[in-house]
Image 1 (cartoon, rainbow, N blue to C red):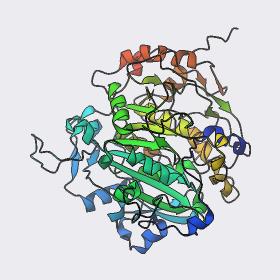
Image 2: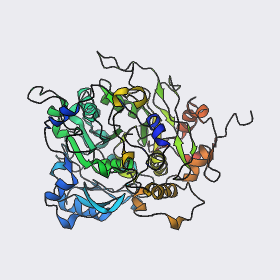
Image 3: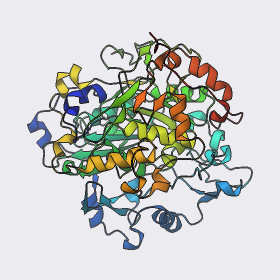
Image 4: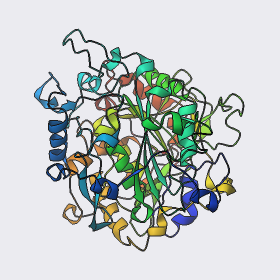
Length: 542
């Protein structure tokens, strides 16, 4: 992550262990920044106001989405023919697509750290479509743009791009969300994404660029070199596939809000990926990760992990990975602080996978790398009411996703890497959002109470004491319970303790082998109602 938790002083020392930093290039001099010539202007909330947005469409929540869908594409909606429990409407998606031509369809929201500030942000492409029940495969197949249209036998619609699994694998679009805080390497990451993809024409990148726009910071969409001098740069060739929401760094309140805006920028792509702003990709990463996701046979699969350090990981000539190991998410414990006790993922084990024919099942979700079908970001959007949160972000998304029916897997091999700040002196000067700590003091504690309350992690707290705004959108699903999650993986939310050595069950492949037996026949996730396993520390008596 590019940000850290302002309310906890000790997090400044721990931050580099949690965030995922990578450098490839030379840190720019200040004089160079002042002379940069961006290809096109970024979007910021003030510029959007000047465009004369339609006030009737400003607002937030489901009413705003309905207005967006009704005005922009009244005929472009897909209604599921399944049971009444799955009655949400999936919007029609298009390709190519950009938020830059959506004047009149943006919405005003209050800044989560200072409600006196109004920000104009992109509208969500869709409200969640899980309908508080197990999402049907039919519904899932309605989400996901194919770069080429084809007539469907049932409707003769020559412009239909939502072809489900009938879309050729190499034609399936990928949305990449990046939250960047004053990070000069963000544009190198974008270059890496496009230059090392086998099919860059199917990729769209959405960047939330939090910068000081007075010559101090680089814009993430600014080419490394002038396009007239080097027109083959990704930020020149594919500039139309890079959407940037620019906001002043002083409004930065952590990765949760920035990534919330990133989720708002999603426009119905087949796959959705989230990475940090300082990541380097291997050659043909797009075909590799799509193949890995398919190997799971699980429509609800999310490939996610803490990324391995960039050093000695990519061949400088072929850009192929030099690693035969990968991390797996299985190590977490409670920690305290001014925001209250909460779970924090610790260092994760890395080794040769014990499951060698597909990605390996794991219990936890990681923010630094996540790859899934597009409906994951539709159904589990980042909660904007969590300013100044860093530790806790991953449990919020992970547990909410679990209750909606998603399963987490460690990829069989890594498709991207980055440097941690503690190992790379070039990143020592990169700022982080905790520089705004005094400005938004106290908001993190309130946000953490909501975060813990939503995922049932603070049963000792009166539920009436925390904010329940838009909980239907940013809350839990009903496919699985939070209690199932806690009991299965040895978490006691009353005593605030965990059963240690969970990795002995996860990394060994035992979890994968036992739980994958209960993958539903239609591939719509693992049926935890058939799982009675409850992890207990095997070394507790020693």
